[in-house]
Length: 365
Image (cartoon, rainbow, N blue to C red; front, side, top):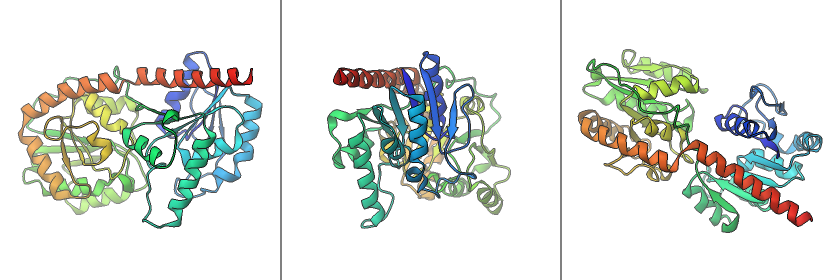
């Protein structure tokens, strides 16, 4: 196949898709509104620098002619676009080839107050993109339900998570006991991931001398959160590492005891699945994306988003109960092996694209 991928190159799944299809022998071209490259795969940048995910939204409309020119030159058999209201919109406007779009989370859920005109605009864009697409992929059951509510035909919706590399993310040897419980968060320093709630919860722990927290991620709020660590007197407890490569994240997870996420919203969180694959006990916000994977009190613990007091209570329980952590680690690894295997889910994505191409050719014939 000749596969045109319209997706931000700073997102991990873009490189994963591109390398997977290229590794199969498919011809791959990536179009991105972010300037990063995918080594070994042709990429064309159609955005502006510096990249700002919150600005320049009009580019998804105004750069559609450039995307169309790239598509005509490449002549794809199929187009894969991730995020419906950005890359999906550009691809739907620009590309004549069969289109498969992928809903990842915030692109489908309403993020604004009820009655806000932006919600009306989002609904119009989502319906337009999905009507143009031959198939709509989504990464969670919550997103599937939302698409159905928006009027997308159930027959055109396909659901599975991205998944994680089970060879890379696997349980490892824990460090020799030194009296510390090692906690980790691998979310970015962005508002939706609510890092301040995690810091405030750790500051509430009476025995915080027993814990060490690593927050491994970049984001535009990183420096603000470093100042917050100083204000809370957590220098000896919390390490904000900034962005780290996947290989290092896997090693950090394999040597951790507790994984924390305070996200207010998610699709299916690859960060959570990576932690579960490594046998790390999850303490996560009580949102649909997490309840789909974590059985509260059995596989992990949960708290109301934004409630540092509830998170602190859950952390105290997780710190005390080593047997609960051990049992959950074994079960969570099995769960990810069953439903969150990256290699299996990439093959499902390839099969979907091949079916779309075959159906289109039959129709043309």
